[in-house]
Length: 119
Image (cartoon, rainbow, N blue to C red):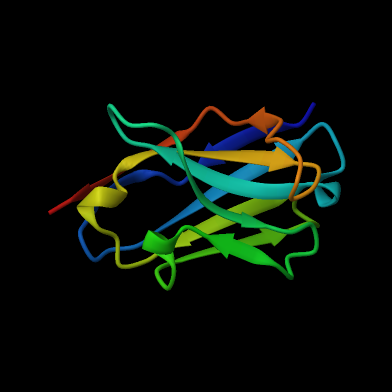
């Protein structure tokens, strides 16, 4: 099992930026694809972004392309989500998760960090 702990959430005005971090422990971090998801009140959890084990391949949901950047530091066992030009509709609890490959299920999840964007 991989233990995941998110941090970096908070309250920001529309147009502002935040950087989320997710620290991993328990297994070899570099063996896992890492991803970010979010869940707004009353809505389903949705995919935001993911990054390959080496960091060479990234995928984003359409609504965050060009505003969010996922990255990872395998030496620090950490994945990041840089969020720029934030919008009120980005308000949600953000979760990180891991999968063993792009085709496998998401297996371990963090507890989430709240991001609130005011208009």
